[in-house]
Image (cartoon, rainbow, N blue to C red; front, side):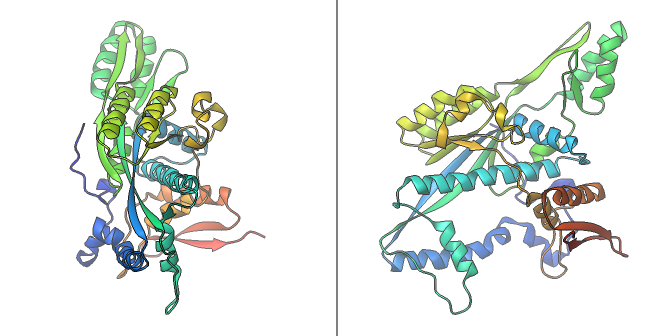
Length: 375
């Protein structure tokens, strides 16, 4: 296990400049304070109605490499300028939280009316007008679903690979020299056409740790072999094993009411069977293949209601822009976007929605958007 010193809401090099009076807005307390007020009100209403409130801990064990590579390839194919791990990390977060919403809906539906979603009650309270009423069902059991995700990955040892490739390039040149040139851009290439772009993988992991739902990280190791002809083998190792071990720890320790493995690997079926023995509902989400659902493994699809389909929400580009926007004196941006990312998100939104947004640079240098609906 790897502990982290990162702070919730701290996006490192993407932290926006904030006025001192507004700095606290980026901290967990202020991220959630509106919901805390609603929670206190809803909890009191549940108590007064004779209903009960229970907690459902939802634990996500996330195999990061597939999520990163799937999103990276999709963005690159759509001409999006990837300027770091920030956008990749936010999209991965949206994917995980969408899976969380699906889990809540399925657990509640399978309870046959014995469980109600506490978040639904909070949403109705937030939408109630002044003096309005929000009904609480007497004698019901409301479930407060709490997500936590743990990250599983292997850091890429660029320095070690570079050192060995330099020796191979001096000895044989050719393929090793090509691989060495690509490595300078974070790309690992195997003989033939197979290659992977890990340039922003470490930054992607770091930015994910800024989420309040992030719990901890587990590191495997990165296996590679450089021979006379250059880099011949590379991939993560121990990651799947660590996910299985952590699953067993969570089951035996009664740490989770719901378990979700985020992975394209079909070898986790025994984990789901063991979870059932413990009375724990388990899911598997193949988020990496959100753009190629037909390529999801048959054994994963065979989980039926316990298989979660990956997706890319048409509202996510605009959500990213909103998170990077600020209103002076009221709330700051959570993070900053590069100009290329900002414009790329506008294009992405327009390709997925009927109303369009256009970026504008204000006289002071800040960016804004205008909204229109094409005829």
